[in-house]
Structures are given as C-alpha cells and as structure tokens.
Length: 229
Image 1 (cartoon, rainbow, N blue to C red):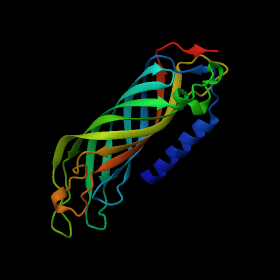
Image 2: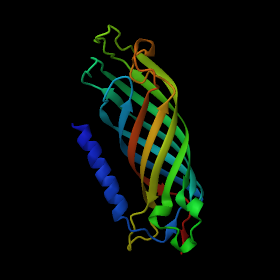
Image 3: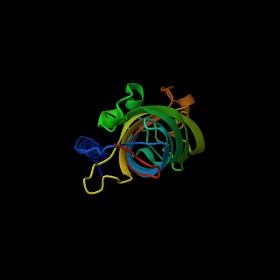
Image 4: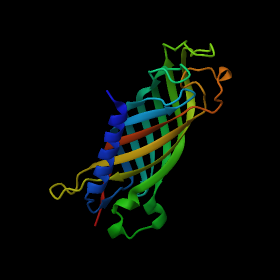
C-alpha cells in the first residue's frame, strides 16, 4: 500500500469535512466525550525520510468549559523506514503510546456571543501536555556503511506533544441534537529519546532527539448535555 497516497487522501478528507460542515446551534458543554480516530504517522529520526504509516486509537475528552478541554489518548501504529535509506539504515518500530493534553479553543480567548459560539472557527484549538511511547524494535537492520547497525530496543520514553485541531459537528436538520461530533487533529511529538529508530546515538552523526507527527481524523460521542440557542 502507498501510505504517502493514503496520507494525502486523509488530508483531503479532513479538509473536505471541515469545509462541508453545517454547524448546528450547539457548542461543547462541560461533560465527557469518548471517541476513536484513525491517522497517518511519520517519524523524524536519524534514519532519513521515514515512511508514512497508519495509526489507530481512542480518546476520552473532558470539557471543562465550552472552549477548554483535556484529552487522554491511546494509540498504536508503526514508525518505520522499511527500505534502506542513503546511509543503508532501516527500521521498524511497532509502538503503543498514551498522551495527555490540555487544550484551549479560540472561543475561550474571543468570548463570542452565545448565539454565534457554534461557528466553526471558534472551535479551532491548540494544546500541549505529556506523553509516553512504548517502542518495540525486534528486528534491527545491521547493514550500514559505518559498521554501526541498529539494535533491538524495547522500552518506554517520554514525549512532549504539541497539537492543533478543530472539533465540529456535521449539522443535520433531521437530527439537530445528535451527540456525535468529529475532529481533525495534527500533533507533533517531541521525543525525549534517540531510540525510536533503534540506532545508538553514540554511533550517529545526528544528535537531535527523535520525534514524530500524526494527523488524525476522529469521531466522538458526547455524554454531556448540549447548550442550545
């Protein structure tokens, strides 16, 4: 499967959903949401031009106010460069991760009139927090020009996630009080490790920490009451 094409398709679907959304007269209210998401993930490590791979996960969201919320997310997927790069490096890391973030939407800063608080751009948000990724590199590549190959690595490392996204409803005149909502989230995770690709940093020219980015398209169900016009 061409995951670069899949990533572009996910991006197109995400943008199409946002611009085709017909918002009903509702905003997020204090309460609990839960949902699932699918995404595309790309790593930035000592190995050049990593693959774009699918990832999957679930999230629990607590809305503190209509425009501030916290997320607790679990996801799993793969970081990889399956073909050798120009330095004869490759790797496959099957990961699991947990991330907790605090998020603030634009509406919290602009304090919109309640009657227009459901407009799309008031629900654009930014956030950050802390995460942990569990890496599993079981079949490292040992063929490199410098003689220093990858190593087997299984371990947990901290990450610092920074994200931007939007929560929205696809409005329906038939079901105006639907508890379902959608989200698009772009998150970059700064790793506090250099082992996401399985290459010992002491034997590498690249001394920067590893990181990875995920674009997610999600669907959530709200258990809290809605505020309505």
